[in-house]
Amino acid sequence: MVVVEDAPPVRATPPAPARRVRATVGEAAPIIALIGAFFVVNDIRSWLTAQYWGDEAWVALSVRFPLADLPVTTSSSPIGWSFLLRLVPDIDHLRVVPLGFQLLTVVAAYLLGRSLASERARGILVGVVTGLTVLLLPVQQTRHDLKQYTADAAVAVCLLALATWTERSWSRRRLAVVVAAVGLGMLLSHTTAIVAVCVLGGLLLSVAVRREWARTVEATVAGLVAGALVAAVYFGVSARGNSDAMRDYWDTFLPSVSELPAHLVRQIKALSPMLGAPVSILAVLLVLGVLTLFRRGHAAPAIAVLLLPVAAIGLGVAGIYPLLDPRTSHFLIVVAGLVVGIGIVGLADLTVVLVRRGLPRPPQGVVAAVTCAVLLASFAAVNHRWYRLDGDEPGVWRAHQAITDIGSSTRYVAAHKGPHDLVVVSGPAWFGFTLYSDQDPLMLVAPVTGTVGWTVTMPTRTDVILPKAADAPSIKDALDEILARAAKQPPGTRVWLVRAYTHPSEPVWQAALADYRVQRVTSGPEPVVVISKR
Image 1 (cartoon, rainbow, N blue to C red):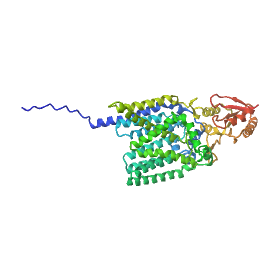
Image 2 (cartoon, helix red, strand yellow):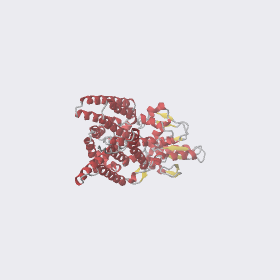
Image 3 (cartoon, helix red, strand yellow):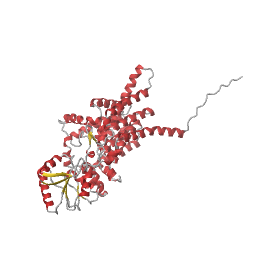
Image 4 (tube, helix red, strand yellow):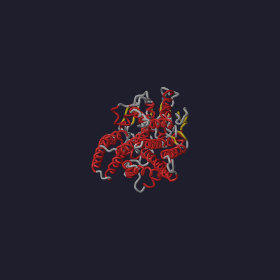
Protein backbone atom coordinates (compact mmCIF):
# COMPACT_ATOMS: atom_id res chain seq x y z
CA MET A 1 0.00 0.00 0.00
CA VAL A 2 1.39 3.36 -0.99
CA VAL A 3 0.92 6.12 1.49
CA VAL A 4 0.60 9.51 -0.09
CA GLU A 5 1.51 12.32 2.26
CA ASP A 6 -0.32 15.58 2.08
CA ALA A 7 1.68 18.18 0.22
CA PRO A 8 2.46 21.32 2.18
CA PRO A 9 0.13 24.17 1.35
CA VAL A 10 1.44 26.48 -1.32
CA ARG A 11 1.39 30.11 -0.28
CA ALA A 12 -0.06 32.25 -3.01
CA THR A 13 2.37 34.76 -4.44
CA PRO A 14 0.88 38.19 -4.90
CA PRO A 15 0.64 39.18 -8.54
CA ALA A 16 3.52 41.23 -9.89
CA PRO A 17 1.46 44.45 -10.30
CA ALA A 18 0.44 44.33 -6.63
CA ARG A 19 4.05 43.88 -5.54
CA ARG A 20 5.09 46.80 -7.71
CA VAL A 21 2.37 49.00 -6.22
CA ARG A 22 3.43 48.14 -2.67
CA ALA A 23 7.06 48.80 -3.55
CA THR A 24 6.18 52.16 -5.11
CA VAL A 25 4.11 53.16 -2.09
CA GLY A 26 6.91 52.06 0.22
CA GLU A 27 9.42 54.21 -1.67
CA ALA A 28 7.11 57.23 -1.97
CA ALA A 29 5.84 57.27 1.62
CA PRO A 30 9.09 58.59 3.22
CA ILE A 31 9.31 61.37 0.64
CA ILE A 32 5.70 62.36 1.27
CA ALA A 33 6.38 62.31 5.01
CA LEU A 34 9.43 64.57 4.59
CA ILE A 35 7.42 67.00 2.46
CA GLY A 36 4.78 67.09 5.21
CA ALA A 37 7.48 67.68 7.82
CA PHE A 38 8.79 70.58 5.72
CA PHE A 39 5.44 72.35 6.00
CA VAL A 40 5.32 71.64 9.73
CA VAL A 41 8.82 73.00 10.43
CA ASN A 42 8.49 76.12 8.26
CA ASP A 43 6.03 78.96 8.77
CA ILE A 44 5.19 79.20 5.08
CA ARG A 45 2.47 81.83 5.47
CA SER A 46 4.74 84.29 7.29
CA TRP A 47 7.46 84.02 4.66
CA LEU A 48 5.12 84.39 1.71
CA THR A 49 3.41 87.46 3.16
CA ALA A 50 6.44 89.31 4.57
CA GLN A 51 7.41 92.49 2.72
CA TYR A 52 10.61 92.64 0.69
CA TRP A 53 13.57 94.36 2.33
CA GLY A 54 16.27 96.29 0.50
CA ASP A 55 18.39 93.48 -0.92
CA GLU A 56 15.27 91.56 -1.92
CA ALA A 57 13.40 94.54 -3.33
CA TRP A 58 15.62 95.00 -6.38
CA VAL A 59 15.30 91.28 -7.16
CA ALA A 60 11.50 91.52 -6.95
CA LEU A 61 11.52 94.77 -8.91
CA SER A 62 13.43 93.12 -11.76
CA VAL A 63 10.37 91.04 -12.70
CA ARG A 64 8.45 94.19 -13.63
CA PHE A 65 10.70 94.82 -16.64
CA PRO A 66 10.47 93.16 -20.07
CA LEU A 67 12.21 89.83 -20.63
CA ALA A 68 14.62 91.59 -23.00
CA ASP A 69 16.04 93.46 -19.98
CA LEU A 70 16.75 90.22 -18.07
CA PRO A 71 20.53 90.16 -18.84
CA VAL A 72 20.77 93.57 -17.14
CA THR A 73 18.25 93.27 -14.32
CA THR A 74 19.49 89.85 -13.20
CA SER A 75 22.65 91.63 -11.97
CA SER A 76 24.47 89.35 -9.49
CA SER A 77 21.62 86.80 -9.44
CA PRO A 78 21.88 83.76 -11.74
CA ILE A 79 19.87 84.40 -14.88
CA GLY A 80 17.88 81.18 -14.48
CA TRP A 81 16.89 82.20 -10.97
CA SER A 82 15.63 85.56 -12.20
CA PHE A 83 13.71 83.82 -14.98
CA LEU A 84 12.00 81.45 -12.53
CA LEU A 85 10.80 84.43 -10.48
CA ARG A 86 9.00 85.71 -13.56
CA LEU A 87 6.94 82.51 -13.67
CA VAL A 88 5.31 83.32 -10.31
CA PRO A 89 1.99 85.03 -11.08
CA ASP A 90 1.82 87.18 -7.91
CA ILE A 91 4.79 89.44 -7.20
CA ASP A 92 3.99 89.30 -3.47
CA HIS A 93 4.57 85.51 -3.46
CA LEU A 94 7.97 85.34 -5.14
CA ARG A 95 9.51 83.65 -2.09
CA VAL A 96 7.81 80.45 -3.20
CA VAL A 97 10.90 79.99 -5.40
CA PRO A 98 13.53 79.91 -2.59
CA LEU A 99 11.15 77.83 -0.46
CA GLY A 100 10.74 75.40 -3.35
CA PHE A 101 14.50 74.95 -3.63
CA GLN A 102 14.75 74.45 0.11
CA LEU A 103 12.22 71.64 -0.18
CA LEU A 104 14.17 70.19 -3.11
CA THR A 105 17.28 70.13 -0.91
CA VAL A 106 15.48 67.96 1.65
CA VAL A 107 14.18 65.54 -1.00
CA ALA A 108 17.59 65.33 -2.70
CA ALA A 109 19.22 64.62 0.67
CA TYR A 110 16.77 61.77 1.18
CA LEU A 111 17.49 60.32 -2.27
CA LEU A 112 21.23 60.50 -1.66
CA GLY A 113 20.88 58.71 1.65
CA ARG A 114 18.48 56.17 0.14
CA SER A 115 21.07 55.24 -2.48
CA LEU A 116 23.72 54.46 0.15
CA ALA A 117 22.16 51.06 0.95
CA SER A 118 20.87 48.41 -1.44
CA GLU A 119 18.54 46.84 1.16
CA ARG A 120 15.29 48.81 1.06
CA ALA A 121 14.53 49.22 4.76
CA ARG A 122 18.11 50.18 5.50
CA GLY A 123 18.21 52.61 2.60
CA ILE A 124 14.97 54.28 3.67
CA LEU A 125 16.34 54.71 7.19
CA VAL A 126 19.50 56.37 5.90
CA GLY A 127 17.47 58.57 3.54
CA VAL A 128 15.06 59.70 6.24
CA VAL A 129 17.94 60.54 8.59
CA THR A 130 19.79 62.60 5.97
CA GLY A 131 16.59 64.34 4.86
CA LEU A 132 15.57 65.21 8.41
CA THR A 133 19.04 66.43 9.33
CA VAL A 134 19.03 68.86 6.40
CA LEU A 135 15.47 69.93 7.19
CA LEU A 136 16.12 70.56 10.89
CA LEU A 137 19.30 72.62 10.44
CA PRO A 138 18.59 76.00 12.06
CA VAL A 139 20.44 77.77 9.23
CA GLN A 140 17.62 76.70 6.89
CA GLN A 141 15.32 79.10 8.74
CA THR A 142 17.57 82.03 7.87
CA ARG A 143 17.44 81.62 4.10
CA HIS A 144 13.87 82.36 3.12
CA ASP A 145 14.90 85.61 1.43
CA LEU A 146 14.52 86.27 -2.27
CA LYS A 147 18.07 85.30 -3.22
CA GLN A 148 19.54 82.22 -4.85
CA TYR A 149 21.19 80.74 -1.75
CA THR A 150 18.65 77.93 -1.34
CA ALA A 151 19.25 77.06 -5.00
CA ASP A 152 22.99 76.92 -4.22
CA ALA A 153 22.30 74.29 -1.56
CA ALA A 154 19.80 72.36 -3.68
CA VAL A 155 22.14 72.13 -6.66
CA ALA A 156 25.04 71.06 -4.43
CA VAL A 157 23.06 68.24 -2.81
CA CYS A 158 21.59 67.16 -6.16
CA LEU A 159 25.04 66.92 -7.74
CA LEU A 160 26.31 64.86 -4.79
CA ALA A 161 23.27 62.59 -5.11
CA LEU A 162 23.91 62.19 -8.83
CA ALA A 163 27.55 61.33 -8.14
CA THR A 164 26.42 58.60 -5.73
CA TRP A 165 23.89 57.32 -8.27
CA THR A 166 26.52 57.27 -11.04
CA GLU A 167 29.10 55.48 -8.94
CA ARG A 168 26.61 52.74 -7.97
CA SER A 169 26.02 51.76 -11.59
CA TRP A 170 28.54 53.43 -13.86
CA SER A 171 27.50 54.31 -17.39
CA ARG A 172 28.14 57.01 -19.93
CA ARG A 173 24.45 57.89 -19.81
CA ARG A 174 24.63 58.58 -16.10
CA LEU A 175 27.76 60.68 -16.59
CA ALA A 176 25.87 62.64 -19.24
CA VAL A 177 23.09 63.28 -16.73
CA VAL A 178 25.66 64.68 -14.27
CA VAL A 179 27.09 66.95 -16.97
CA ALA A 180 23.61 68.15 -17.98
CA ALA A 181 22.81 68.85 -14.33
CA VAL A 182 25.97 70.98 -14.11
CA GLY A 183 24.86 73.02 -17.13
CA LEU A 184 21.37 73.54 -15.71
CA GLY A 185 22.76 74.24 -12.25
CA MET A 186 24.98 77.03 -13.57
CA LEU A 187 21.87 78.88 -14.73
CA LEU A 188 20.41 78.67 -11.22
CA SER A 189 23.45 78.87 -8.93
CA HIS A 190 26.88 80.43 -9.30
CA THR A 191 28.32 77.99 -6.76
CA THR A 192 27.64 75.17 -9.20
CA ALA A 193 31.06 76.00 -10.63
CA ILE A 194 32.65 75.12 -7.28
CA VAL A 195 30.58 72.03 -6.56
CA ALA A 196 30.91 70.67 -10.11
CA VAL A 197 34.71 70.63 -9.93
CA CYS A 198 34.57 68.73 -6.63
CA VAL A 199 31.90 66.25 -7.74
CA LEU A 200 33.50 65.44 -11.09
CA GLY A 201 36.89 65.41 -9.40
CA GLY A 202 35.49 62.87 -6.93
CA LEU A 203 34.19 60.66 -9.74
CA LEU A 204 37.51 60.89 -11.57
CA LEU A 205 39.70 60.14 -8.56
CA SER A 206 37.48 57.29 -7.37
CA VAL A 207 37.95 55.34 -10.61
CA ALA A 208 41.56 56.39 -11.16
CA VAL A 209 42.60 55.06 -7.75
CA ARG A 210 40.99 51.72 -8.63
CA ARG A 211 42.88 51.81 -11.97
CA GLU A 212 39.71 51.59 -13.98
CA TRP A 213 41.27 53.37 -16.93
CA ALA A 214 38.32 53.27 -19.32
CA ARG A 215 36.11 54.92 -16.72
CA THR A 216 38.89 57.37 -15.92
CA VAL A 217 38.88 58.51 -19.54
CA GLU A 218 35.09 58.80 -19.49
CA ALA A 219 35.15 60.83 -16.27
CA THR A 220 37.86 63.08 -17.72
CA VAL A 221 35.81 63.76 -20.85
CA ALA A 222 32.73 64.45 -18.71
CA GLY A 223 34.75 66.89 -16.62
CA LEU A 224 36.01 68.72 -19.69
CA VAL A 225 32.51 69.04 -21.16
CA ALA A 226 31.14 70.22 -17.82
CA GLY A 227 33.98 72.72 -17.54
CA ALA A 228 33.13 74.08 -20.98
CA LEU A 229 29.50 74.52 -19.92
CA VAL A 230 30.52 76.28 -16.71
CA ALA A 231 32.83 78.62 -18.62
CA ALA A 232 30.20 79.37 -21.27
CA VAL A 233 27.54 80.33 -18.72
CA TYR A 234 29.95 82.21 -16.47
CA PHE A 235 31.67 84.31 -19.13
CA GLY A 236 28.54 84.62 -21.26
CA VAL A 237 26.15 85.73 -18.51
CA SER A 238 27.27 85.52 -14.89
CA ALA A 239 30.45 87.61 -15.14
CA ARG A 240 28.34 90.69 -15.97
CA GLY A 241 27.37 90.84 -12.30
CA ASN A 242 30.98 91.36 -11.21
CA SER A 243 32.05 94.88 -10.28
CA ASP A 244 34.52 96.72 -8.09
CA ALA A 245 31.63 97.67 -5.80
CA MET A 246 30.72 94.00 -5.36
CA ARG A 247 34.34 93.11 -4.69
CA ASP A 248 34.58 95.83 -2.05
CA TYR A 249 31.31 94.68 -0.47
CA TRP A 250 32.66 91.16 0.11
CA ASP A 251 36.19 92.20 1.04
CA THR A 252 35.73 91.19 4.69
CA PHE A 253 35.14 87.60 3.60
CA LEU A 254 38.17 87.40 1.31
CA PRO A 255 41.05 86.83 3.75
CA SER A 256 44.72 86.70 2.87
CA VAL A 257 46.78 83.64 3.76
CA SER A 258 47.98 85.28 6.97
CA GLU A 259 44.43 86.29 7.91
CA LEU A 260 42.95 82.87 7.16
CA PRO A 261 43.28 81.14 10.58
CA ALA A 262 41.72 84.05 12.46
CA HIS A 263 39.01 84.38 9.80
CA LEU A 264 38.08 80.70 10.06
CA VAL A 265 37.88 80.82 13.85
CA ARG A 266 35.84 84.03 13.82
CA GLN A 267 33.35 82.89 11.18
CA ILE A 268 32.85 79.40 12.57
CA LYS A 269 32.11 80.99 15.93
CA ALA A 270 29.66 83.41 14.30
CA LEU A 271 27.93 80.59 12.41
CA SER A 272 27.74 78.19 15.38
CA PRO A 273 24.26 79.29 16.60
CA MET A 274 22.85 78.41 13.17
CA LEU A 275 24.43 74.95 13.16
CA GLY A 276 22.31 73.61 16.00
CA ALA A 277 25.02 71.76 17.95
CA PRO A 278 28.52 72.38 19.36
CA VAL A 279 31.15 72.54 16.63
CA SER A 280 33.18 69.78 18.29
CA ILE A 281 30.26 67.31 18.11
CA LEU A 282 29.53 68.27 14.52
CA ALA A 283 33.20 67.78 13.62
CA VAL A 284 33.12 64.21 14.98
CA LEU A 285 29.94 63.45 13.03
CA LEU A 286 31.45 64.97 9.88
CA VAL A 287 34.43 62.63 10.14
CA LEU A 288 32.10 59.69 10.77
CA GLY A 289 30.01 60.72 7.78
CA VAL A 290 32.98 60.76 5.40
CA LEU A 291 34.26 57.44 6.79
CA THR A 292 30.79 55.93 6.39
CA LEU A 293 30.72 56.96 2.73
CA PHE A 294 34.10 55.32 2.14
CA ARG A 295 33.13 52.23 4.12
CA ARG A 296 29.95 51.75 2.11
CA GLY A 297 31.89 51.98 -1.15
CA HIS A 298 30.89 55.52 -2.16
CA ALA A 299 34.30 57.08 -2.63
CA ALA A 300 33.15 59.67 -5.22
CA PRO A 301 30.82 61.70 -2.94
CA ALA A 302 33.25 61.24 -0.05
CA ILE A 303 36.12 62.72 -2.10
CA ALA A 304 33.82 65.50 -3.35
CA VAL A 305 32.90 66.41 0.22
CA LEU A 306 36.59 66.53 1.18
CA LEU A 307 37.42 68.70 -1.83
CA LEU A 308 34.66 71.27 -1.13
CA PRO A 309 36.28 73.03 1.88
CA VAL A 310 39.65 72.98 0.12
CA ALA A 311 38.11 74.68 -2.93
CA ALA A 312 36.17 77.18 -0.78
CA ILE A 313 39.26 78.17 1.18
CA GLY A 314 41.35 78.46 -1.96
CA LEU A 315 38.79 80.69 -3.69
CA GLY A 316 38.44 82.83 -0.58
CA VAL A 317 42.18 83.39 -0.24
CA ALA A 318 42.43 84.07 -3.97
CA GLY A 319 39.81 86.82 -3.59
CA ILE A 320 37.37 85.08 -5.93
CA TYR A 321 34.50 83.94 -3.70
CA PRO A 322 33.50 84.95 -0.13
CA LEU A 323 34.50 82.45 2.53
CA LEU A 324 32.05 81.47 5.29
CA ASP A 325 29.55 84.26 4.88
CA PRO A 326 26.19 82.87 6.10
CA ARG A 327 24.57 83.60 2.74
CA THR A 328 27.17 82.83 0.10
CA SER A 329 28.44 79.77 2.00
CA HIS A 330 24.95 78.46 2.73
CA PHE A 331 25.54 75.57 0.35
CA LEU A 332 28.64 74.52 2.32
CA ILE A 333 26.73 74.55 5.60
CA VAL A 334 23.89 72.46 4.17
CA VAL A 335 26.33 69.95 2.65
CA ALA A 336 28.02 69.74 6.05
CA GLY A 337 24.59 69.04 7.58
CA LEU A 338 24.03 66.31 5.01
CA VAL A 339 27.34 64.65 5.92
CA VAL A 340 26.48 64.98 9.62
CA GLY A 341 23.28 63.05 8.86
CA ILE A 342 25.36 60.28 7.28
CA GLY A 343 27.60 60.47 10.35
CA ILE A 344 24.56 59.83 12.56
CA VAL A 345 23.95 56.66 10.56
CA GLY A 346 27.62 55.74 11.01
CA LEU A 347 27.25 56.24 14.76
CA ALA A 348 24.16 54.02 14.70
CA ASP A 349 26.26 51.34 12.97
CA LEU A 350 28.83 51.56 15.77
CA THR A 351 26.03 51.27 18.32
CA VAL A 352 24.83 48.08 16.64
CA VAL A 353 28.36 46.63 16.85
CA LEU A 354 28.57 47.44 20.57
CA VAL A 355 25.12 45.99 21.29
CA ARG A 356 26.10 42.77 19.50
CA ARG A 357 28.75 42.17 22.12
CA GLY A 358 26.13 42.05 24.85
CA LEU A 359 23.26 40.42 22.98
CA PRO A 360 23.57 37.29 20.83
CA ARG A 361 21.06 38.33 18.20
CA PRO A 362 20.16 42.00 18.57
CA PRO A 363 17.49 43.42 16.25
CA GLN A 364 20.00 45.42 14.21
CA GLY A 365 17.47 47.50 12.31
CA VAL A 366 15.63 48.44 15.49
CA VAL A 367 18.84 49.38 17.30
CA ALA A 368 19.98 51.55 14.38
CA ALA A 369 16.56 53.20 14.02
CA VAL A 370 16.26 53.94 17.74
CA THR A 371 19.78 55.42 17.85
CA CYS A 372 19.04 57.71 14.92
CA ALA A 373 15.65 58.68 16.36
CA VAL A 374 17.13 59.58 19.75
CA LEU A 375 19.87 61.73 18.17
CA LEU A 376 17.51 63.54 15.80
CA ALA A 377 14.87 64.07 18.50
CA SER A 378 17.52 65.53 20.80
CA PHE A 379 18.73 67.84 18.04
CA ALA A 380 15.18 69.01 17.32
CA ALA A 381 14.43 69.55 21.03
CA VAL A 382 17.54 71.67 21.54
CA ASN A 383 16.70 73.80 18.50
CA HIS A 384 12.92 73.94 18.87
CA ARG A 385 12.84 77.75 18.99
CA TRP A 386 14.15 77.86 15.43
CA TYR A 387 11.22 75.99 13.93
CA ARG A 388 8.13 77.71 12.55
CA LEU A 389 10.17 80.88 12.87
CA ASP A 390 8.48 83.99 11.49
CA GLY A 391 11.87 85.70 11.27
CA ASP A 392 11.50 87.92 14.35
CA GLU A 393 12.45 85.89 17.40
CA PRO A 394 14.66 87.93 19.78
CA GLY A 395 17.56 85.88 21.01
CA VAL A 396 17.25 83.48 18.07
CA TRP A 397 17.06 85.26 14.73
CA ARG A 398 15.81 88.59 13.38
CA ALA A 399 15.46 88.58 9.61
CA HIS A 400 15.34 91.86 7.70
CA GLN A 401 12.17 90.87 5.87
CA ALA A 402 10.36 90.22 9.15
CA ILE A 403 11.08 93.71 10.50
CA THR A 404 10.75 95.80 7.36
CA ASP A 405 7.71 97.93 6.62
CA ILE A 406 8.63 99.57 3.33
CA GLY A 407 5.54 98.30 1.50
CA SER A 408 3.12 99.59 4.12
CA SER A 409 5.00 102.89 4.33
CA THR A 410 4.93 103.40 0.58
CA ARG A 411 1.25 102.64 0.30
CA TYR A 412 0.38 104.84 3.29
CA VAL A 413 2.10 107.84 1.72
CA ALA A 414 0.39 107.19 -1.62
CA ALA A 415 -3.00 107.13 0.10
CA HIS A 416 -2.51 110.19 2.35
CA LYS A 417 -0.20 112.67 0.62
CA GLY A 418 -1.59 115.93 -0.67
CA PRO A 419 -1.31 117.11 -4.29
CA HIS A 420 1.58 119.46 -3.51
CA ASP A 421 3.38 117.35 -0.90
CA LEU A 422 6.95 116.16 -1.47
CA VAL A 423 8.21 112.66 -0.72
CA VAL A 424 11.84 112.10 0.26
CA VAL A 425 13.16 108.54 -0.07
CA SER A 426 16.49 107.41 1.34
CA GLY A 427 18.84 105.53 -0.97
CA PRO A 428 18.52 102.15 0.80
CA ALA A 429 14.71 102.42 0.61
CA TRP A 430 14.60 103.35 -3.07
CA PHE A 431 14.15 99.90 -4.59
CA GLY A 432 11.47 99.04 -2.02
CA PHE A 433 9.64 102.32 -2.57
CA THR A 434 9.62 101.94 -6.34
CA LEU A 435 8.61 98.28 -6.08
CA TYR A 436 5.55 99.04 -3.96
CA SER A 437 4.64 102.11 -6.04
CA ASP A 438 3.09 99.59 -8.38
CA GLN A 439 0.77 102.06 -10.12
CA ASP A 440 3.64 104.30 -11.29
CA PRO A 441 5.65 103.69 -14.47
CA LEU A 442 9.36 103.09 -13.99
CA MET A 443 12.35 103.65 -16.22
CA LEU A 444 15.38 101.35 -16.11
CA VAL A 445 18.75 103.12 -15.87
CA ALA A 446 21.92 101.09 -16.52
CA PRO A 447 24.77 100.84 -16.00
CA VAL A 448 25.26 102.69 -12.73
CA THR A 449 27.90 102.50 -10.02
CA GLY A 450 27.00 100.13 -7.19
CA THR A 451 26.60 96.49 -6.33
CA VAL A 452 23.35 96.08 -8.30
CA GLY A 453 24.57 97.85 -11.43
CA TRP A 454 21.23 99.39 -12.37
CA THR A 455 18.54 101.58 -10.86
CA VAL A 456 15.16 103.04 -11.78
CA THR A 457 13.60 106.46 -12.08
CA MET A 458 9.95 107.50 -11.72
CA PRO A 459 9.41 109.82 -14.70
CA THR A 460 5.85 110.80 -13.73
CA ARG A 461 6.58 111.45 -10.05
CA THR A 462 8.24 114.87 -9.80
CA ASP A 463 7.16 114.96 -6.15
CA VAL A 464 9.45 112.05 -5.25
CA ILE A 465 13.03 113.02 -4.38
CA LEU A 466 16.02 110.71 -3.91
CA PRO A 467 18.81 112.72 -2.22
CA LYS A 468 22.27 111.97 -3.62
CA ALA A 469 23.87 112.16 -0.20
CA ALA A 470 25.84 109.74 1.94
CA ASP A 471 26.84 111.65 5.09
CA ALA A 472 24.94 113.75 7.61
CA PRO A 473 26.04 117.21 6.35
CA SER A 474 25.13 116.45 2.73
CA ILE A 475 21.79 114.94 3.80
CA LYS A 476 21.05 118.13 5.79
CA ASP A 477 21.92 120.28 2.77
CA ALA A 478 19.56 118.21 0.60
CA LEU A 479 16.75 118.42 3.18
CA ASP A 480 17.19 122.19 3.49
CA GLU A 481 16.73 122.55 -0.27
CA ILE A 482 13.66 120.29 -0.24
CA LEU A 483 12.07 122.20 2.66
CA ALA A 484 12.77 125.48 0.87
CA ARG A 485 11.02 124.11 -2.20
CA ALA A 486 8.07 123.00 -0.06
CA ALA A 487 7.82 126.49 1.44
CA LYS A 488 7.07 127.87 -2.03
CA GLN A 489 4.10 125.54 -2.38
CA PRO A 490 0.57 126.31 -1.08
CA PRO A 491 0.11 126.38 2.72
CA GLY A 492 -0.17 122.96 4.32
CA THR A 493 2.36 121.35 2.00
CA ARG A 494 4.18 118.56 3.82
CA VAL A 495 7.51 116.79 3.32
CA TRP A 496 7.28 113.03 3.89
CA LEU A 497 10.30 110.87 4.56
CA VAL A 498 10.45 107.15 3.78
CA ARG A 499 13.62 105.34 4.75
CA ALA A 500 15.01 101.86 5.53
CA TYR A 501 15.68 101.66 9.26
CA THR A 502 17.56 98.35 9.07
CA HIS A 503 20.31 99.67 6.77
CA PRO A 504 23.74 100.52 8.26
CA SER A 505 23.25 104.11 7.08
CA GLU A 506 20.38 104.66 9.56
CA PRO A 507 22.61 106.33 12.23
CA VAL A 508 23.68 108.86 9.58
CA TRP A 509 20.06 109.73 8.88
CA GLN A 510 19.30 110.02 12.59
CA ALA A 511 22.20 112.45 12.99
CA ALA A 512 21.03 114.50 10.02
CA LEU A 513 17.44 114.69 11.32
CA ALA A 514 18.47 115.93 14.76
CA ASP A 515 18.07 119.58 13.67
CA TYR A 516 14.54 119.13 12.29
CA ARG A 517 11.08 118.61 13.70
CA VAL A 518 10.25 114.96 13.01
CA GLN A 519 6.66 113.77 13.39
CA ARG A 520 5.84 110.05 13.17
CA VAL A 521 2.66 109.41 11.26
CA THR A 522 2.67 105.61 11.16
CA SER A 523 3.62 102.87 13.60
CA GLY A 524 5.53 99.70 12.83
CA PRO A 525 9.23 98.91 12.56
CA GLU A 526 9.88 101.51 9.83
CA PRO A 527 7.49 104.43 10.48
CA VAL A 528 6.88 107.19 7.98
CA VAL A 529 7.71 110.66 9.26
CA VAL A 530 6.87 114.21 8.24
CA ILE A 531 9.75 116.66 8.62
CA SER A 532 9.76 120.41 8.99
CA LYS A 533 11.98 123.22 10.25
CA ARG A 534 12.18 123.70 14.00
